[in-house]
Length: 463
Image 1: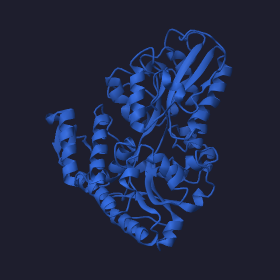
Image 2 (image 1 turned 90 degrees about the vertical axis):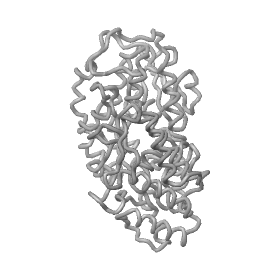
Image 3 (image 1 turned 60 degrees about the horizontal axis):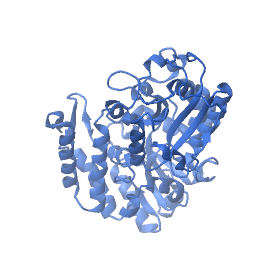
Image 4 (image 1 turned 120 degrees about the vertical axis):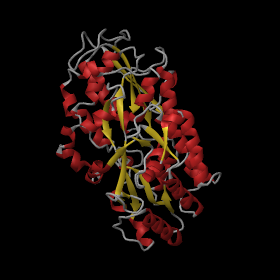
């Protein structure tokens, strides 16, 4: 998700899916379309920017396929795919740079829900309310998904194509060698650490535990890693909804960072060099897990998409080798489990040159047929009710039910413009602990000071 300017074609399949040879201008119809057809023929080039995750081309292949269908429906239009092969943070940066100018802006882009408010504040996106008001499909989208695509101004700036949750993946074969149960469900953080210590002692050639950290992996460190710990503490949160202020001075925050300290000082995780590499997420899913070099991984529901025949690292035995467990709260408090949800949307930049044609392509991608195919291939949790109820979705992947059931326990990141900067502070705080340049209390103070600078001392509260 971060492609911008002209270097679009540099990425792997930086291919352009040409739907029809139409030299047309870069403007389709001149007025926003409602849910139905646009006022006029759909013509011209539609530049589509999205992130390509390493060697995974599931989304690119899906978009190419849908581009062909779009071409058949609109012979005068051309879809130009502009994949950005980059780390998480680099994608966001490149995408935002490209949206600044009509010359470099895509006509539609894959936008992470947590960036919507900050990108609106920067003037990059255009609201879609006039378009969705006449689009009958919008009623099929779940309210939680609609909210995730909605900004603080109450307007909708993206159409979601799926959501996700996070949990534990573990290698049953390694567990058996370590004398651990192959049907495993830890009830506390301490039980996870005990299992990791047993693996270190009895299976020394495997990394016992992976928790994402550092700026290299970007938002994965914030969401798959730190926030899965923080929100598992009693009343742990980044943002206090009652006071509408950001939380600082939190013991929960220090407790979460202490887990990182225990993992890295105890030799239970990857090396700092491995963990801080921008490609570590791809390495985990496409190498470490398939080659049984990692025992426990706190990660996303989408991981098995890498191991399907269409994935970046096909692995037929994955469901026999790997098991899943929900992430427990710190000491089993509350419901005993915690998970976080995010999601991506298709948005139209304010500087798009062909917004009407882009809207027509978005409708095709997010139709029932489009989302059913994408959610199955990319192992996404459906945001459309009709897709979630389709028998073919449930049967498509053996983990679909486990992860879908976790949605009822899920937590969403604070949807505020400041979150992107605060997320970077989280990544930096975890990196300090992993590298040993700060202890948990010092790294927490670094975070607290940074939050005060970002939002102002009057917008923080002490927990």
